[in-house]
Image (cartoon, rainbow, N blue to C red):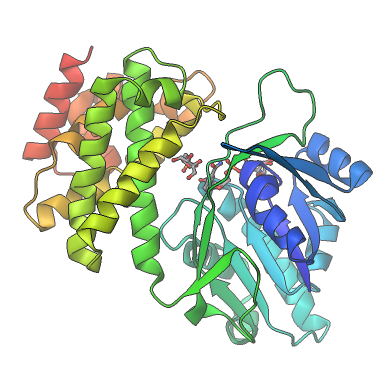
Length: 382
Ligand SMILES: NC(=O)C1=CN([C@@H]2O[C@H](COP(=O)(O)OP(=O)(O)OC[C@H]3O[C@@H](n4cnc5c(N)ncnc54)[C@H](O)[C@@H]3O)[C@@H](O)[C@H]2O)C=CC1
Ligand SMILES: O=P(O)(O)OC[C@H]1O[C@](O)(CO)[C@@H](O)[C@@H]1O
């Protein structure tokens, strides 16, 4: 079996690429970073540092890499059995035209074998969104063939993989936590279901996607935003701050009450899942900056993402949401010199004021109770 994985970054190298290579799949990474491409092609492998109570070093071998914008990537799409991505939600649209070209070539070459494409991003049904981008780039007369031969499979991906340790000069260095979970929607595959160790198949994906995104990612984002407010540089320092921890646990519980009602999760197991997540944030072996976890605040404050969607759920089921609102207020304070969305957020706040800015970003009604509460908290946090 052959696979092409877009994005040789943290999750690409530290999780999905590793899992595919471990399964004996012939793996090529597609990326745009010359440093990553050169290092992967010259060394054909790298070490994954798995850190926890017992640290291990797990080598990945027999991999190579191509430029994702070039003809090599197009040729591979015509040939491989599996395409995966971990590029970031905003990049999916950029890689779609080349993927579309590869699918057209696959058809022209008469390759009728099923191909499955799985986006491994922090998004609700990210592959379905990617499919829309690919279809926008496909000629009209190719769409029926692609629909018949290509599976677009949604997934949920969970493993905390911060950027390389400070001070390293190795572009392939990657350190991961021991926990990992990759769950894919088995109803969307074309052809035989692949059996890959570490890839779980489900026919109830939405429950898993929302459980992960609206628990781990909700709590993580609020840890980052409140942590930055309190002057903490890392997620560990932030979550060990009792004031931050109280709100983070509270927000995950508020979101959890929604998930329990929506998907029928067992409350006891769900609250244990929350406790486990708090210990993952505390991991003393990972250095994870609050700035990284809070990145792209406009995306994280958008209607379908980890802060607003759980809040809308609390309104739907008439449940408490004070901690979620506190998290939203803190998100409005996120600042980062490296992050264009953080700059855009500041500009919008200055231009239209916090009420209109939050309403515009989140889709919440400007004159509603939530916006009023969040803005009052935002102003009190100055
Ligand atoms: N790091 C983590 O702990 C987790 C991340 N995720 C999700 O995985 C995705 C990737 O995140 P990370 O690996 O942390 O980011 P990253 O920034 O480490 O990796 C992204 C990679 O994509 C590459 N890239 C950028 N533009 C590209 C293009 N046009 N074509 C091909 N490659 C391109 C970058 O050069 C980089 O190597 C995101 O959607 C994130 O939300 C999900 C779970 C865990
Ligand atoms: O990758 P995003 O969506 O910007 O958000 C950062 C989040 O993703 C992760 O990297 C992995 O789930 C978490 O560490 C964090 O909650």
